[in-house]
Image 1 (spheres, rainbow, N blue to C red):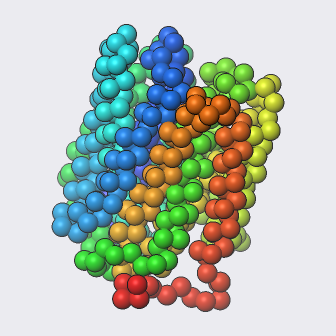
Image 2 (cartoon, rainbow, N blue to C red):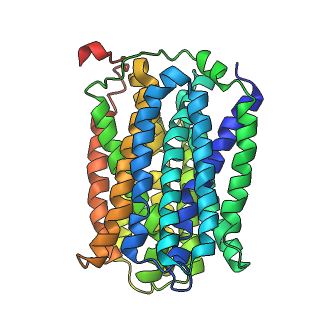
Image 3 (cartoon, rainbow, N blue to C red):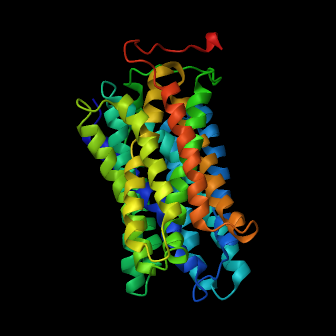
Amino acid sequence: MAQRSEIATVYGAGLIQGIALVTFPAASTIFTSPAGYGLSSTEYGAMFEPEAILAIIASLAGAGMAGRLGNKVIYLLGLVANFGAMALLLASRFFISEHQAAYGMLLAATTCLGLGFGLTVPALNTFAAAFFPQKVDEAILALNALLGLGTALAPVFIAVFLALGIWWALPLVVGVVLLVLLFLSFTQALDEGERRSTVKKSAANKFPARFWLFAMFALLYGICETMNGNWASLFMLKSLGASALLGSVALALFWAAVTAGRILFAAIEKWFPEPAVFRTLPFVVAGALVLCAWLPKNGAAAGLFAFAVAGLGCSALLPLTISFGQKEMTSIAGSVAGGLIAFYQIGYGIAAFGAGPLQMRAGFNLNAIFGGTAVVAVVMAILSFVIVRPEKQPAMEISNANT
């Protein structure tokens, strides 16, 4: 049985990772304001490309490295990278008047954040599954609920600190907490919890055929989540004429609904089983995106509602994708988590960067882009019925020999 301190540290790291991840999108109005960094929509979107690329590389490489170094080392390296991201973001404020220098530091910061996310999150999911091998779905949902809580808190903190004139206090506080987590994690035998797991390990990293269905779902999900998570505040400002405060509220509502949904669906599993949740939520996401596409210029209140619904729709999809994949492909469970996070990040990169050129070069407004993303959600919904097997047929482990 895992020590309570180990569990608290791992789940606490999930909370802080969530705050760190959304610190940059939460500060979108600061980055794009002429009084702030003065970034264009294209520059703002491109800022997340290094994050996505490094997260993909780190999550894929981390799965192989974990077999040699152990998940604890990978996790600690991820915390160090996250700290680097916060330090660079904090330092960049001293170079706001020097556009190129400040933007270069922001790119370096998101590069570190991608590395940190790609190393940390797969390790945290593996630890959670190992701590509670009899309740893997619930354990991963709980971990991701805390990660979601962190993502909901980031825009709230930014709004508060911005009102106080010290927006930079958020990366400062997160950086200090990361240092504390590094110390606590270093002193704990987290790998012992992993070794107690009943999850099998395999030196082979080759993915079976069905993995690619899960991977495609994760990619499509990444597009849908990121359109909401990275562009909500700017959508409220540019398309709906809302204030910067309402933009932060919309982003906070989205991530708060993500968190609440993860808690809710874990609590009502007996009445609303995970397979049914998995097949239903993509349609909820599609509906919210369609609503965003049709919102009028003065529709700020409806925009808040739409992002809350979108958050509920997104809530359980990625955790369930990971837990379903790990349970179905138990012999490569660690690699499955890393691989799915990598494809999620590919979707993240597509939406984070792609929405910028679509506005600046192709002439699409954010309403149209959100409407196009609804088509992605519908494809994701169709794919969910292919991934989730009939409940009468017990899921069987897929071995690499069948590929």
